[in-house]
Length: 417
Ligand SMILES: *Cc1c(COP(=O)(O)O)cnc(C)c1O
Image (tube, rainbow, N blue to C red):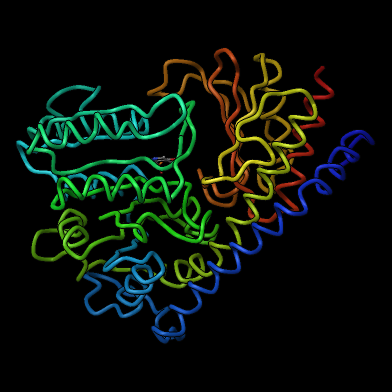
């Protein structure tokens, strides 16, 4: 790829400014890798665990040991991780339906959950399709404050007032919302406050995009269940598909009965040759996340220097891998996405165009050139075609390729102006 002198200079300036940030990211990646490798050693990972199973998958040692390793790494009592979980939304659905019963209340204390959960909860969509609402589960929500803090007074009051609350739900990452991502420390404070009033409540965390960004996960600070996707952070760019749930023994057991059947839980499920890529994915995940984080920091610096408003800023501490840039016009948003696409390893020759994606009220433009369809630990970008034309992006399997993608987007924006 060819870049103009001004783009290259901007990149050098950014990297000089980011030396300390990058060193901190390396430190976190080292600590997380150490935790993962400790678990691999203690659970005696060997080649025999990579073997495949078919049919019922009874006695698949590789699958069972991987579950134990995941629990250990996440600071949880139990976990299951399956290639057959089709997405993050599916994993969250398994968790919510596993824990909630008719008459219970799901209480989201960090504002609106991710878009795809609205139909699962029954906030939108046709009734009768089998949402939580159809099954008699009620929903309550308290938004975060303007500064992105929990409204503890209101939350405390509601927990005292509503004994039917069974699940307290927290989304860690901002998703596509205009709010800050929660830190693990913040989540820990909220968990403690909730448990003080209602120790029996399950605190469930949508952990998407947060894994391995810090040295602790919400389960290390008391969450009962954390849930995420393997084609984001914790699959390390290696897992072909899948999701995970980790948490207390009881919460994971209840969720496992929704994964398969009551009575069967995690004891069956053929792995169809996927064990090795899931082991390898967990092994790579801390490093891959560090590469995505460096790419995001670089992007924040470069685009801010170019005059765009970015969130988070280049020198801010991060709690997920998402970066947003306000481009200000449809033309610039499209130019940005074209640049990312051209800087991708797969489908670099494709030109992304805005389209009316089902489930979204505005047209959306997406750039994705990864090895795995829809994988967002690989460099990928998207944005709705509406003011202020914000582009959300994340990922980067290697810092070098992530940097190329960012420089390509910067060049594309400069050329458009
Ligand atoms: C991506 C994401 C989801 C849903 O994951 P899919 O794999 O797209 O179904 C849920 N919550 C958050 C915060 C996410 O970022």
